[in-house]
Image 1 (cartoon, rainbow, N blue to C red):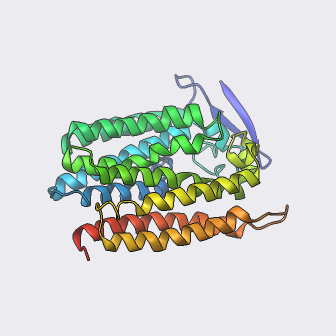
Image 2: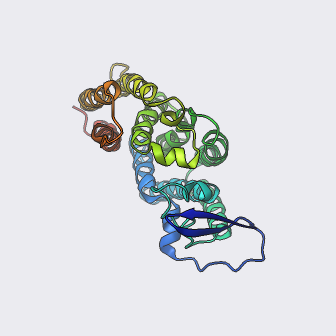
Image 3: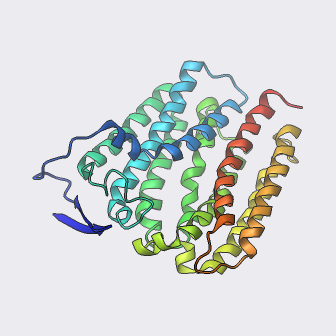
Length: 316
């Protein structure tokens, strides 16, 4: 069955049948790579690597590389399956209309097969490289992102990012468990940090992409609850995220290097969130504070997780 959508005056045709009967488009490796959401994957890989390197054990380099590769492939599989399921929605949004599926460069069956195959391979690789505990967590993260977040939460509730944030919080926990075979307080705190970081990060994006989400019918917080409520919640989550970021230091799970990094970076995060949380905008507003917060939130997580590793290997 063919479903047509209008994008910028052009006709978008996407095959929804996943069986047979239509000629498949030739798959370009660049389009398959784009399905994995490489920019998102870079943060996943980095936080997973930091979880592995912060663990109190030494992992053979080959097995460490294979474990991180498995996590990267699992994240890529999640991204591919997300894009396969949301191709129709992506076609309605300017930010995502150029992706391989809505742009017509890739057929849905290829995307589905690629995503499922990549997920299966990532789990086999993780089981080979580390242990069943890490493999189970990786499987749980993939299933949670695809079925709970993508298929269930995102199209139904403005709390999609809050609950769905758990999917993106798994990598440091998986990296730690891949190294040790067990769960400890520090990786749980890192999981909590990403979980609380996700709402202000994505709601800042949703504020300046509100019209896109509204056009696609996705119930993001600014679309459903309005800007004022979203801004208050960004500030609320930024405050409790800052507390969660600093918490490992007074509890003795990290040292002063991480502690002071968390204090300084989190203070700046809260300052940017106050600016976003207390302002009002007009129809022609350029949303510069929201864009700054969104960009800074990415750098914040990279630097903070780097500090976790630096604190472990070179404590003050």
